[in-house]
Amino acid sequence: MNRIFFSALGLLIMLALLAGNYWIFQTAFSVDYLEWYLKNGALFGIATTACSLVWGNMREHAGLISANPWNYLGSYLQLIGLPIYTFGTHLKSDDQKTVQRPLFDSLMTVILFTSICAVLLLWLIVVVPLQYFVYLIVGAPGRLMRNSQRQAIAMFRHSRLEVKEIGREEPLPQGWWHASLADKPVAITGLFSSLFFLVVKSLL
Image 1: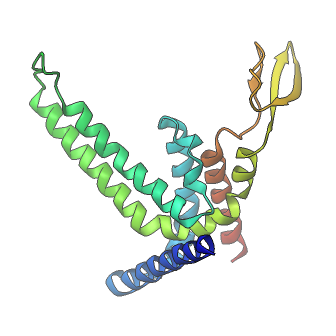
Image 2: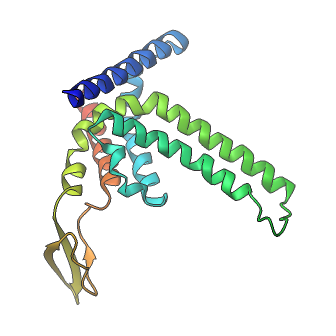
């Protein structure tokens, strides 16, 4: 019962954020929030896929496509906290020695990291709430594959492609590679999101 209650509360928070975004866009910019999101949704999906592939193990963070609204929001809050922590780490010096940093590099780094944090915060407020409902649909394959106990592997033997399946915990045989996207649920969801918006735009 408590689980249902908290899930419903999470959905209400998402809907409240959507309503707030809709009101702000309409009042401050005279722009329909839903139309704006529909116009840019494919770009958001591509950006998510690109970030997930180049930013560490973000592509494996299944919480970013979670159907649970609390896990979903919590994962994106963690994502925003990461560059802040990273920035602070790089600015630290060892106690044993003092590092001389070029003034120009330090200034540009502060500006760029501050800009990244601001963009991520805007992303959290403007994009993430509506994206939850999109990912609830297009994230289903990623969530399903993530929980699968089997995985497909492949290898090229001369000009012929060979495929087979193994258990998820089995070691990868030498020369074979993972043919499944189960280890990249965020990336595949971003791609499905882009396709979703392209199809919707073509139908409207």
